[in-house]
Amino acid sequence: MSLVWENMVFSIIAFLILYLLLRKYAFGPLFDVMEKRRALVQQQMDEAANSRTQAQTFVEEQKQALATARKEAYDIIEQARQTSARQADDILSGAKEESVRLKEEAARDIESEKNKAVAALRNEVSSMSVAIASKILEKQVDEKEQEQLVGQYLKEVGDKQ
Image (cartoon, rainbow, N blue to C red; front, side):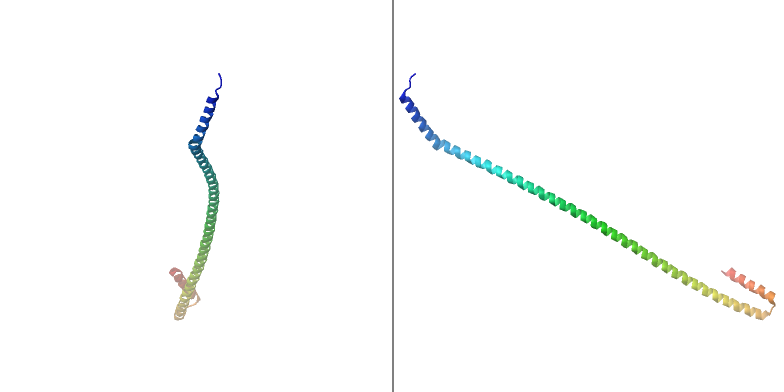
């Protein structure tokens, strides 16, 4: 085998022409497509990183919002407990005041009824005393009859009650 310089030069020239044509019509658009693809992949990676950062930020915000909501719920529950305790105390104090008022009112009623009964008894005793005295004066009886008369009137007073 011998090398033929003409074939070799022709092959090199053909190869250079093919390379220039490929470079102009194939490699340029191919490299452009590859560059666009690289840019797209890089953009998607950047967007993914941003999305991941946003997701982490959102998760942190949600954690903070949840913690705030829990604190608010605890505060509301605590406030409700305090309100219910205050209302219970108010109800108890109102009931105590009402029972004291009813007790005092009952004591006044009892005292009033007692005074009425004493007054009625005094009136009856005084009228009986007058009646006894008038009967004693009418009869002008001795002491023994007088004791019987007083006993009889006392017995009548006891029967009336």
